[in-house]
Length: 285
Image 1: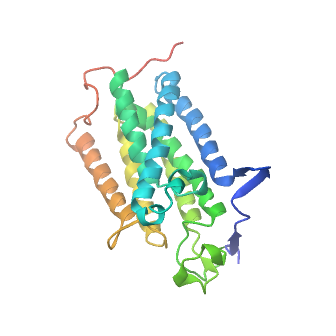
Image 2: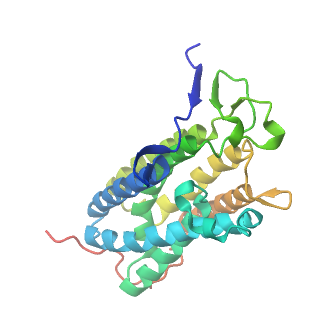
């Protein structure tokens, strides 16, 4: 069959030099960050925002996102880490949550925007395409770590998981849904859609309001994540609820509410700076 393919991870390590191991997970995250910052600086120029400002806020956002992603994951997996506190910072082994990264990064961007008196929505609008692309790249780290996979499947496309990485209740199964691939492909579609809307907005500035791209990202990403999360075997849980699905529903509702606020009520989104202030930071010619 044309769509028949099987994924098998070659392992989490790219190469080792003595005691130093270069891991796919870290390499992919670093690559996503580098590509994302470069792309955001390019998009910032097109919106007449100083790209140097993007470089400055990126440092804040990246550090806060990594810390937020790890704290979020550890809190919901506390039983696993309570007896091994040293592992709480072992991010190179995997174990971060994108929702925690978004929360941490957004808080940092809000503080930076307030201090530098620039619209938070202007910043997030040039960051969300890079975020979607970064998520598409980063999900492959789950593949190399043999983690974040779905339920057992006999579909033509499937992911082999070694016995040591399988949940106890699924030890008799070899193949699982490649949810890393589903989300990577979904995020690529979200990225393509955001880029199209970004440049459409440049041609229709009078009709495309600040913050629209961020709200569309919230809705689009959350729709895909809600469905994909239902397939996974390792969801972070709060009682019977899958946390990622709950947060995704909140994201969808927040995005829809924001679009109604912008286009139906015709009011600017609440911001960290006054709406009377100029939102653009001019690029030097």
